[in-house]
Image 1 (cartoon, rainbow, N blue to C red):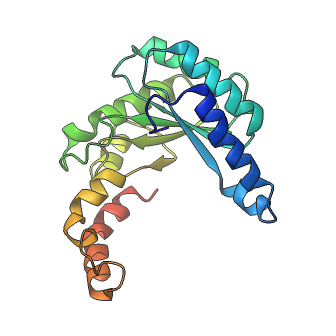
Image 2: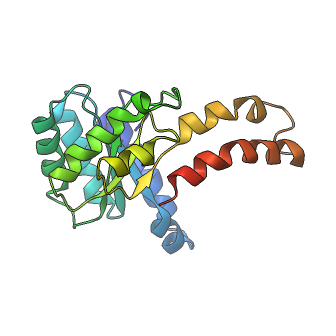
Length: 197
């Protein structure tokens, strides 16, 4: 979660609201498209695992775990993932291999290197998960991943994409001016094309 230091009780309240949403008449469609994400980038194992246990008790859909090598060594990172997925069915978890989180950095190999390196560690562990490259991703990400033999399933390009179209999306008339929308799409299209599998 990007909610920072959310307590377990706060998490339970938020997830109860989600459960109530899932009970409505559109539950099957919503549940099919629902993915929950938990950030795994801190040292507090007890906190992480108490939240993870609770989420798994009330939600059996696809879950995403955001991981990076910033605070954990390679072995500790894989052990944490193994422990977290041990209670889940195979391929019901997305591992978001985070390089340089929310950077919106430059469009070069250096910016995306950590995302690809983190993905390689996960891939080499041969875990029954989907692998998403994220954090520091850009138009070079898939090229570098292919050069390194990374078999990824998805690429998250949000921060960099927002950065390159910022002058358009910050306009007051962005949602109402078709020319502005088309200009933004033309700028971001090469990036989107670069990450298509």
